[in-house]
Image (tube, rainbow over all chains, first blue to last red; front, side):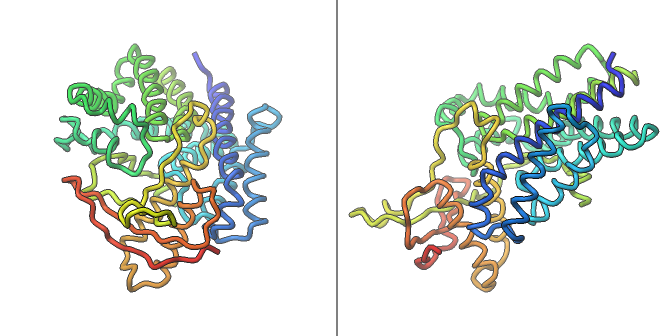
Length: 237
Length: 128
């Protein structure tokens, strides 16, 4: 049984790992973003924000400080402000959500269970709503939509995956499997036994998303929310 | 802020009717006009990029910015046009090492029946 304290401690480390990865990427791109005038603030300020995010998240990850969710949240918001938009869409949304919930949970023991519960619900919704938006599309059931995203979208998909996507049965089965996992995810609240199956399947799904579409940040942003879901299911069934 | 706290989570819900991509004209080699227009190819993916993938994430960031700019009438909006040129130049320099002094770009759209439409073609742009 995972306690709320353990959940908070694991969650903040996982979200810090996500922040370290995000900050290191932005730190690497800092000169490029400034030179190409993509960011609207001074170079020095942008460097300072990226360096601070990298430093605070590294210190949190190494357990030197743990009550840092609010600081990480402010730094993440500063980055969004500098870029005038999310850098990586959904992974930014999930990271911000996790940091908001952890900021509340770290500063109020009364609100902590509600904050972590909210994070677990958001995680569940992220799969369920993504599946729900797809089920009415016949192209998702036939595999055509998945084939489209692999072959004709702006993502740089490896050639081998593009070749694999030409097998119509394989692409249709993968597509239906994906729909069932996404739409069926809330089953974990009804049958505890399905929890390890769903969580391991979604982890593989995020790894595949990285390999196929290059979406590395999603893996860590979603992983950071798993302890909240484990805690909610173990304590409120 | 509302969107940040309550995201719609509608990922990849439906394929768009046209996929927008950029082609660049940087070549001075003796090639035909069609061959001189090339798409930027990202290098093959490596597993360590799970931990560090700045170029690819930046390209996706620029791509979403370009798609948003194209929703405006770029021919009539000089500010949006300037932004588009900036994003195109940034996309090109992400994967190009050779020193460029001038380049051209065009915005293409691949339609559902695999045809390529050219939505916009730039004049030669001097690199800053």
